[in-house]
Image (tube, rainbow, N blue to C red; front, side):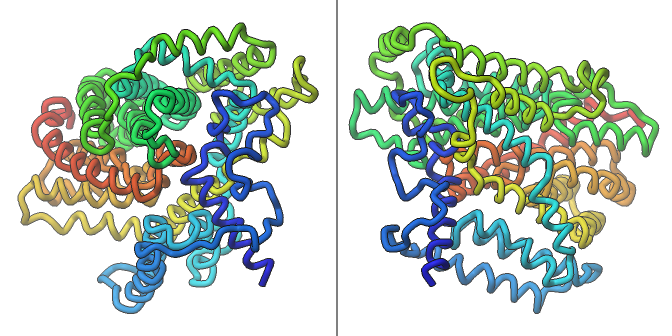
Length: 550
């Protein structure tokens, strides 16, 4: 029984790392004044140190269930049983019905945090094989997906930045450039992220921006606490930190919509149109459509975050400019270790940016994951000058947020189950049943269904599946198929509720500044607004750009 309690406590510790303790990702709790010993994880809350293999259950605080956790604890399995026993729509296979039941169970436990989030993320490993949906080997492959290793490699580089205090130098430089108005700092980050995301992958863009966003968040928190002790800067309760992280993720998603290469869903749409109809959607035509939407949506989402979802009480950081200058002076000149980490980080970023049009010509097998892992390996090889050991070591790497890696693996496993069971095809086939309703309502249903599906699956997989189905439905509806496919693309892109909906969401969730409940509550309103916005755009703007191609 002692070992069971110890394991359960370990899972709650990982759960806290996933949602509350960003020090395990980038050492934020000691970021400003930490000694460069790298032993950040042992500070602050000893019971949250995840690399203690045998915590004493007698010393670990007892966990009491909240009301919402208790409700979720029983609601999840109840939904699973009810859907399994009573939900069998025409055309839906028994396997698809089982997957739908599992999705309902996992989503409920994710949102209510009825049990630790990393444990919930392992449910597909148990339920899929037991219910005959997928073999255990096929399910477990999702937990070793290349995206997970992309996260791991990038987090290792970020940990090296934290270890040698480079992130603090970068943060001070960013704040000095943007200014000390918290709302404007968020807008500056969102604008930069959105622009970058138009040209490189959403994932790589978020990986570039999050270490800097974390550093700025901690710097703002430290500055506010110096001037106002009543400010709660605890991760998950600090409005500025939550808004900045969500703004960075959402801007990466929105910015990717601006160009054909900005997101896989856009590229797949152009390829599908070419294959089905022999019509080319040019880079310029898509930019004519996508860039105006990015320019409109990023400021609107920013206003929603800073004025409605997480209003900023502080209009300026009191004495901010003087404090920033003093902090920069105290940092002094860059040391050898900082220069090495900065060089590796910069080269990694350049490799991500140039991979698709330069590096692939010389190294055909290279991808973002390989680039991130190479960067991490390089840091392991280079010895430090001002401390015994190398730039990056295993003690530092052990602070990786393993819980978030399990979470993302669980999302990928769900996506694989939805696809292999045919649940995605059944959902898509229902779109052809709305020939007698107004077109705007049909658009809302199509976009809404695809958005919900995307919350639990890769938007790449969703778009690949729905484009041909939507094209076929357009014939029955008497609508231009390209217009309907663009609507599907918007539905597959604008999913903001869950970490598993898109890599940017998962990355910022790993910082600990966002609770699952907060992300869902904030994202659901954005999803609804995006559906309404998409219906308007598809009804009036899309025909101006894409009509007449067929």
